Image 1 (tube, one colour):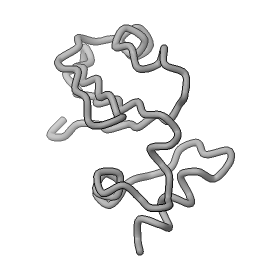
Image 2 (spheres, rainbow, N blue to C red):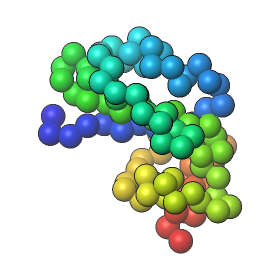
Image 3 (cartoon, helix red, strand yellow):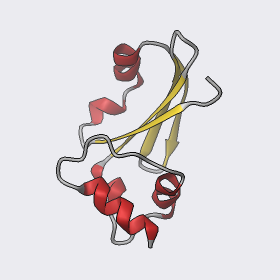
Length: 98
């Protein structure tokens, strides 16, 4: 409970950038909505008190030619790929190390 959970979702489906989608799925109170370039961040507090930040960005956020400086920083802070069926995030992970 001393930290938050950060999740980045890459999708070209705009409806997922709406805060209500995530509060409905995860439950909780929206604390803040921020825009970081193409990434929209929805920060919410779950009933347990855990703070979850959902970043929703278009798939081009993970482009590797070149890797955007902001994207490189997010990936460089540490990440774990949960679902990457076509390898977009795997390629970004490798490109962010160079």
